[in-house]
Image 1 (tube, rainbow, N blue to C red):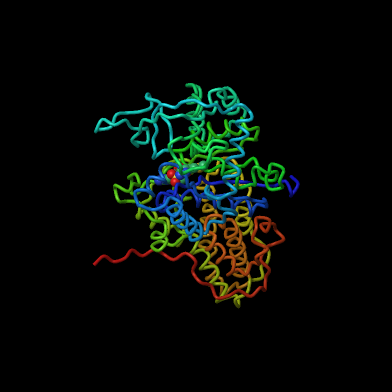
Image 2 (cartoon, rainbow, N blue to C red):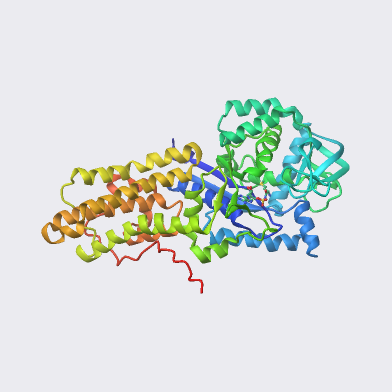
Length: 519
Ligand code: MSP
């Protein structure tokens, strides 16, 4: 592929800003960031977008309850989401706020396109609406709660709404959507979600109410000041706002649209795989290549919720465990696409075994031995024995293996397991070769063994950058790898460590977690 064609556009969902971010939001940001970093390191021109979803009744009501003007309220919470991107070391290239003028412009433009295409008509909506989900439901989707109120599948109470409304002709897009799912089997990932969406579409789509008459907190419908847009129509549009829509001829739009991945949680699949592609088809725009639906994080086996009081604030967790350990834990422990559970015991276990004992200890013992026994320079190696070559070969085989895993189904947990298999090989090699025993009798062989190990650590450090960027960078600093030699292209043979390069005194990168002593 020509270098200029290697673009990669990925997005996260944009969060409602009716509160502060929690670990679920952090999880999505971290996983998306790992993908963005992976693709950059692999030579792609990446555009990584995130942002905030500031309209809708949910945000408006929470602001009213707090007695604060909605704009001031969302400004305050958006700042917390922006902060989160900073302290989680998220490498987003842009951040769209739906209250920004550029987003109003994009939303009104797509609306106008839909009107011009005859896809929007005026009608009357009467039916159920869940403010928490910002979604309409038919009666057969609801259940009765304990107090007799109707509940959406999420458990949120629904309210009866009856008002003039503009409708989008969603029902006419069923066949086209089903065709698209058939022609592009990996449009919706994982497969289980694709099956769920396919049966939803087959069960029959109804036209969608895309405006709200009684609300004022939203983007005005062009030409009708009495209506604001249904929040999901505007929110989904953020994905094209971020690449310059409505300027379809702009370089940015042409370069990045259609998106390669929308990364979202399993609760918002319908909006992204039915409504959004239907809006895009109706507006004559290309469809994103993949929508990946990740699972939900539970805390110690329980759903995270304000009422249970177990909502974890990402910054508290960083204070306790450190950022990279959290990033590693979430990506390694939770199969991407499935639900996962956060527990103190399991993160401590991952920190102490995978990070401290396996990778941390490998790097630390190799670098300390070089520091003490090889004059603190990259040692000169002699002829390689089969065991040396075997370790170097297994490290060299990692990039294609990991690339295949990421490109197929974003299975970060498998990519990390694969990398850690080589960490294990390297630790076994240290034990078998026992370089400390060679010091007196065979210093040349010791130098070769330590060279092979240092070179393996270099490769591992380059490969773990997407997941634990700060720690990987500290390891590469200790190996004196230049900033320009840290991409996956530097895994080529000719970028191997140069014997004689002076190395600084090593410093452990992954400390053990020692539980506080409870008095
Ligand atoms: N505003 C909508 C998305 C609009 S995208 C055009 C929304 N916001 S949200 O704040 O409720 O959720 C933002 C993202 O966080 C969603 O992808 C959602 O699935 C994800 N998560 C929210 N809670 C979560 C967990 N407990 N675990 C993992 N992800 C979770 O939906």
